[in-house]
Length: 592
Image 1 (tube, one colour):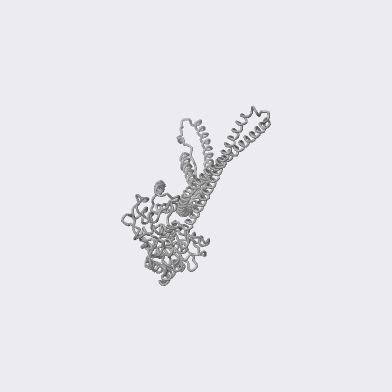
Image 2 (cartoon, rainbow, N blue to C red; image 1 turned 45 degrees about the vertical axis):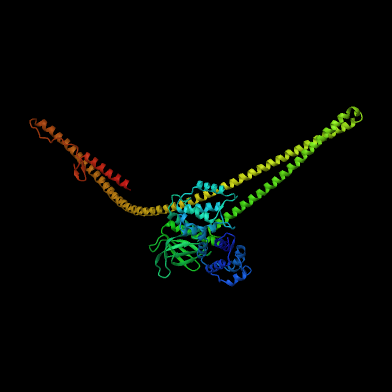
């Protein structure tokens, strides 16, 4: 929709508000004031002489809307450019029309909220006059408003409202005016259980998106170009620029970042104590921005990249492109329905013509049958007298009758074929209706899948943030584990060295023990020889001196000889020491 079409809707509301008696005409003095105000807010030089010259033949009486349109197009709309404040223009037109049509006492919303709904209505309404909004656009507006308020959309409530509209209106396409829409939202019919503040915030969010073209907004930190300090700013993203303000009330604007097809945005690593950084490179300057968290950072990067892609493709903002597609779809459906109605009318006309033709044929057959009956009766009356004379004629008449019966049978067959075609056309009409119903369901399924995709994307972003946090924790744990692993490796080397020393000591002990055992065996052999000698000597003494009894040493147990000397420890003590050494060796092996 062009700028001229958007401005004409607001001007139409202002013009009709000046039409007090609803005659479709406005006095010239009022049009002068309206024209002067329009030129003022749209920054166009006002020429009051041109208005007088244009309506010099209408000095008496009011001026109609059609008479004002040529002046409006020539002296105002043809000169307008996009360098004026649209909000001031809309507020001027709203001030004129709201005084006459709006009853604020019956509404739960403020005058400011009603003005925003009026602007949204002009954006979504059809390009016809008087402007109306169809049920599809009304559902789109109410659904987005409910989502902005944090509520849940109740499809049954909207269907009940459509049925109520259908009972009140006799139109094929249900629609409402702007004042009906403001009354519907202000009455709280679709915002039950939601307070006024949430309703006002929802209207504000929808106004920012649809009218102000704000695709995303929020607080972030920006690095200065001169002082290099970080300052918190309120950023608003639009299709062609990013503006940043001191606060969210938008009273003090600090600058703009102009976007074009050459702009780029990329993530930065954390530095200077700032996290969640990203970098915007425009044709004029480059900006470093810090978001509050990783999710906000990713959302801003994706939103800015979407704007740049739209600029590169030469496309409009997403909501404006969506509105254009919905209108094209509605026009296509209306054309299809009109074509279907035309075909049905043609079929109905052809059916009526065939019925008339069949009726004429039936009458002709009845007349032919009546004439045949009269002829038959005549022949019967004269048969006795003229039997011989008219026998040949009788045979000829029978042949004619047979031909007529064949013609009747042929016409009956043609009638049956025509009825079959009529039934096929009716079946085709039912199939077309089923196809339209399937298309409507498909659109509903598409909307459901789109929401599901949006929710899955949001969950994916959340999971990605959680995975990144888990990854950081794993990196820390791996670092700690590496340090512990190095300490354990050092301890294991120390224990290996101690174990080698102990093994060497044990081998030395085994060698010493083996040497002591050989010495012990040598001593035992000498002792055994000495014992044998002693026994021999004792035997000799007993033989020679039987009265003498020698004092003999007592019996001794088996003694052990080690590197500490003979009888240092027993076999049990040796076994206990070997068991302890084996346990210590097993512990060192397990620790490794």
